[in-house]
Amino acid sequence: MIKILMVASEAAPFAKTGGLADVVGSLPSALRELGCEVAVLIPRYKGVDLNSARRVYDSLPIWLGGVAYQCSLYQADAGLPFYLLDCPPLYDRPGFYGDAAADYPDNAVRFAVLCRAALAVARRVFRPNILHCHDWQTGLVPVYLRSVFALDPTFIGMKTLFTIHNLGYQGLFPPSVLPQIGLDRRVFHVDGLEFFGKVSFIKGGLIYSDALSTVSPTYALEIQTKEYGFGLDGVLGSRSSALHGILNGVDYSNWSPATDPYIKANYSIHDLSGKQRCKQDLLTEFGLPKAAMDRPLLGVVSRLTSQKGTELIVEIAPELALQDLYLVVLGAGDAEMEVSLRDVAAAYPGHIAVRFGYDEALAHKVEAGADIFLMPSQYEPCGLNQIYSLRYGTVPVVRATGGLDDTIEEGTGFKFREYSARALLAAIRAAATAFADGELWKAMMRRGMRKDFSWRVSAAKYLTVYNELLHGATAESFSGKQDQILSGG
Image (cartoon, rainbow, N blue to C red; front, side):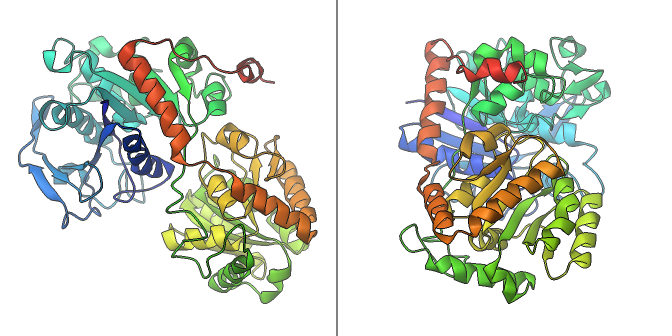
């Protein structure tokens, strides 16, 4: 039996800011169904309730740079072991990564402690064959394993897989943090952690791990180009034989209109009538007029950042109102983006409504009540909301990048390639034209609802990678699509 310890900065339902948490919260169960034994380690943040958890390790001191960080370990009441690393001075704070003003200045130490704690858990609590690390916050796990603990017999034969969820977030810190995180300058060079004069946690994961993966086949190819590589395209190109693009799955037990407890009325591919009630409920929630029932209602649930294409939505807002289209937005992000959205909502109050923050129940209501879901991302490693939208019969309009390109096809949604307001608006107009033909629109809804992006297929692909790592099989090569993307075609 393969034993996997997943290490991440968040996992649903305990701590969530985005898709990373959904993946780490769902993939382990799918792997268990394939015969794997899986445990997960995340920090115990301020908002994580310990009332139903049990303390499994009273004292787990983590030494870094001559400082002992007093930690303990809890196991959450869940179907499989979710370990919560408790260290109040580091994690008992309002936010996971920072407050409203900025990232926490000691994030290097906070997540270095998580990485060293992962090895302590692997030694003392749950002994895995594979350490599966997620994003920059866990990039030092393979670094410690291959440097500080390189000669430790405890870890002989233990393999590492590092998954990139978003290459745009890299964990960059000044070289002065090296002593604080228990590393010397021997790892600070161009073939190590050095990245334009800074220490890069994500580069540690890319260089020192036995294998790499990312969250869609197209994104695996895109990050090997200058346009999407964020300065690491050369590193990723040199490791292309070890890089796997595995599309994220979704948990349909949480995202299905047939059973969703958050929405006004349940509905299915066989009976779509409840979707109209969900639309009316969403309009009421956002204070939009009943007249919108007969026109396309566009929905957005997103971080409000340039990566997500928020500025394109702001730019086309006047045109949406002019064409008698309606828009609801749920999200939080850059202050300037929030101000811009607030301004357009104030300018077009009968057509555009915005709610800032994240609300799980309202996110489900948007998926169920909107007719069209917008994801005009500048880049998108995988994306989950477009997959949720398909299941809810909410037709996606997406930019053809990363996982958006992999999951949306002609007949289930609308794609545009040029990153511009003009291209986005053209795709929305095409969707609005299709919406006017009721039977055509219902057929498109049903085609999307039939799509299956459950974790079953994706988990099987991860299992293949694990077996390759443990038994030395040759990594699978990319499809013929590689040459097209790497050449910019």
